[in-house]
Length: 85
Image 1 (cartoon, rainbow, N blue to C red):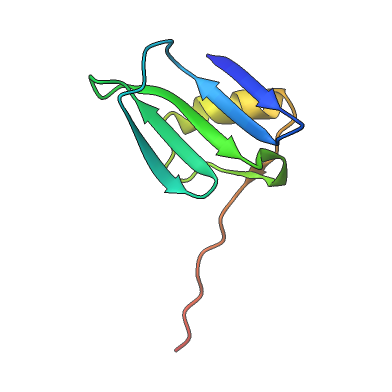
Image 2: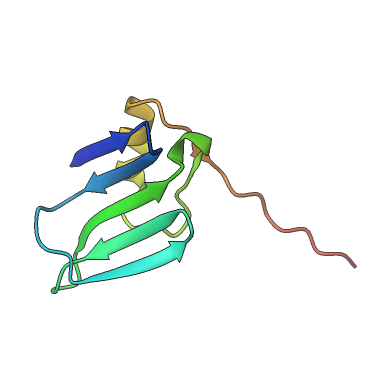
């Protein structure tokens, strides 16, 4: 895995393959997954990872977490939504 972290723009990209991205899936405003034509995960981009990276629903999350911690990026654990009633 190759990791690029741009501190100035606070963006990180975790690359699993050097192949071309055929489509992107935007999980939310801070997480984008790139897929190859064959459906394999090419990479995952995180916007503002210094605020904490949410890995819920991210492919290959365990691998990303290891590398993020290695370079000092925090992991954010989403809190369960409390429902009234």
